[in-house]
Length: 80
Image (cartoon, rainbow, N blue to C red; front, side):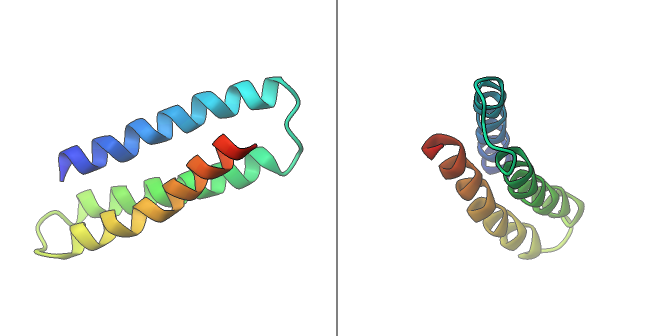
């Protein structure tokens, strides 16, 4: 569970660094709020997974649900 969360976290850091470069080079106004919304949704689900660590399946479900928004943020960051 920690390795999966670390992967999500490192992906988020990479997206954030790429977003800083994109904003400094003139990204459109919708870019940063959309990227932030996707990333914060993913982080919220990952935090929920750690808070539910005493459950059997819920943390894994929340971590699996955190991956698609982070993947969307990654695609948005890379394809802009």
